[in-house]
Image (tube, rainbow, N blue to C red; front, side, top):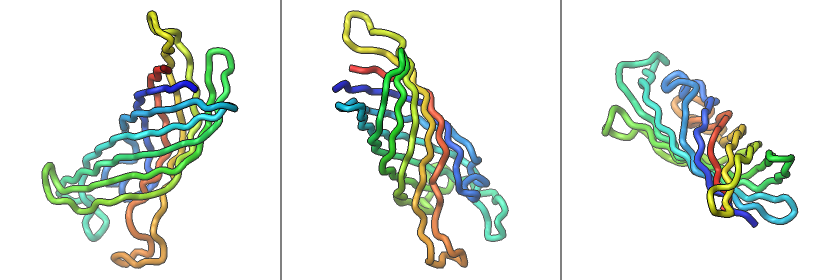
Length: 183
């Protein structure tokens, strides 16, 4: 069993049209990952990230207003999957539960408009290219490229301000690039 720790930069394209209008439909986030290779080609991974985007609030008519706003995300996921080595490349795929904590506020240091958690699932594929052994250790350095989709649950059937679907959709398509050290 080998433990691997990594840092990566992930680009996300959000699903929610309102969030895309307010904060842009693409942004970058930093992520920390820890993975352990188990027998029979299994891999268990945990990911935690951070993302903050600024924009403008939308008024009652659906137009961008003058009030600045910020939204912070803290995505967390646990994956169980398979991996296999093909030469110097370690290919992997996993599926598992995901959650995103979010907080939105008006202006810097202003009052919070909303905060909460969204639950869902993450499916992700990755390729780690081994660069070689670190000096005088048994540790190996790799570059990892990953792609995935985070599907988040929404509340349906409740009426919120005339809408039949409540809250944000924090689901996203993700593409990442990072560095992994296998211990």
